[in-house]
Length: 71
Image (cartoon, rainbow, N blue to C red):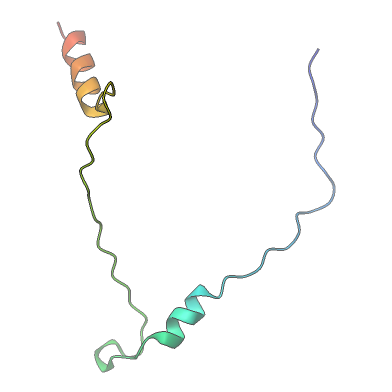
């Protein structure tokens, strides 16, 4: 027997709007060169973490699979 799920006619409750952007704007000092435009810089950080014992690196697994499929 197939179970049927009915959706509610009631909409979800409203969420609270984040004040993060306004807080950020109020804490930044304008720089004349930006003409007051808000600019952000995010720098990605990569950290090499050793695999736990018994785990296989996904790149090594894909390479192994590709090389065994071509032979």
